[in-house]
Length: 77
Image (tube, rainbow, N blue to C red; front, side, top):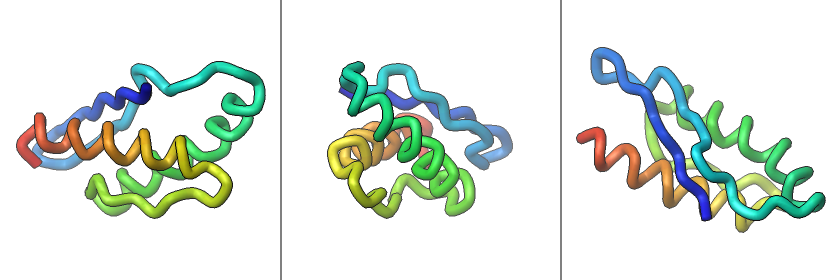
């Protein structure tokens, strides 16, 4: 399960933080350590919950995208 928290200031997303980031086995941790910073960077630069999936991290990308989309909706963005 993935859960993302966003910080919004003056209508702009200023931070994206992982609250829960899925499985904790070694392989998943390695994949997430590379994919999550890329996904967060995409959200901050585009100011949108729509992210491009990271190659080799489809499960992580999908979970992140779903959670960040929900966070944007809750924030009224």
